Each structure stands twice: as structure tokens, then as C-alpha cells.
Image (tube, rainbow, N blue to C red; front, side, top):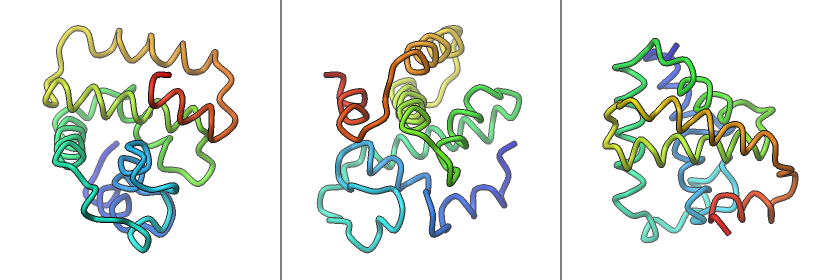
Length: 135
């Protein structure tokens, strides 16, 4: 479950972080670890902050939505895969587009994306970038 302790660790850990994942998925940073030391802050758009806000708001307001919790927190573990990162991107992008509001399509859409991602070989940075960029 998402808690204040998880939020604090997610925002301040030296390893993969929530904001690091968002910034990496947008192509602003090449890593989601130690991103704050190499970041060009002028490249950060409002969309990144809004995606973070809507996703975190959703997690706090919907503790029973285990699918979204799992997608977000799997991408923040030390043993995350490129597939975990793609699913994180899909989840945060959906939250941004839906303004954090759950509707009937959320679970269905995330399951479809999860099935597509888990049945696709994404084992290099190039394949990861292509999956994120939709190319």
C-alpha cells in the first residue's frame, strides 16, 4: 500500500525514484538513479509535475487499486526491468491524461498494456525507448 513512509522513500532514495522514472521516461535524463545531479532543469515541463500529482493523488485516494500500486512500485525497486519501466510510463501517462480520475476503462486499459508489454521482448535501452516513444 502507498503510505507516507513509501512516499518519502520514493521521493528521496538514492536508487530509482518516482520523479527519476518520470524524467527518464520523458527522455530528459538517461537514468532514474542519481538523476538530480545531471538534470537540465530547464527541460522539465509542467506535464511531469502534473503526472506526478495525479498519480500520487490516485494512489492515496485508491489504496485498493492494487494493479496501479503494483505497476508504480515495481518500477521503483532495485531489480526493476525495462518492462516495469514501460508499465510505469503507461500508468503515469494514463493518470496524467485522466487527471487522476478513475473510470471504468482504467483497469481494462492497464491490463491490455500489461499483456502487450509482458509479451514483448524489451531487454535493451533502445527497445525500451521505442516502447516509451511508441515507435
